[in-house]
Length: 153
Image 1: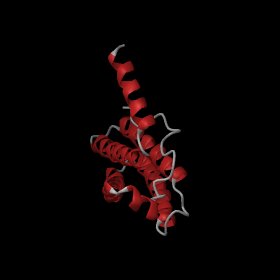
Image 2: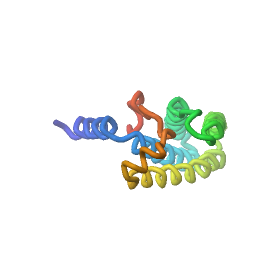
Image 3: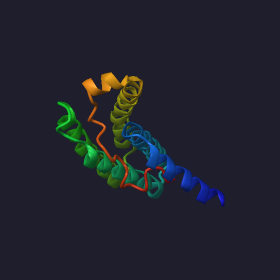
Image 4: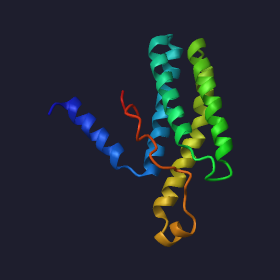
């Protein structure tokens, strides 16, 4: 098996066996990485490379929005509004080539990523009894299961 095929298999296995909480944090990590890369490419004037990262970031936000259960918790509707705002801003940043606009999106996403990582750690540390008493449905089910592009590039 060559390196690329081995890497693809590893990534596919990692995604297919990850918990919903882990998938969510993987998506947020990749979203931040895409935004960092796009911002850097925009700063040096490489709009083609920046566009590829911004389009991938948009795909991730669409996946996050599609899998968000807006009835799961009080803040879910507000989080959906953030996702819709991000999609609009990412499209605008791509069209304009504006690194500052991309940076603003990244600055909005990073605290969300950190919060989901903290929530995932707390869910992982919870006892089965605690989980039964207060299930965390906000992670949804099947996050990124339909997306084969989460970790490419």
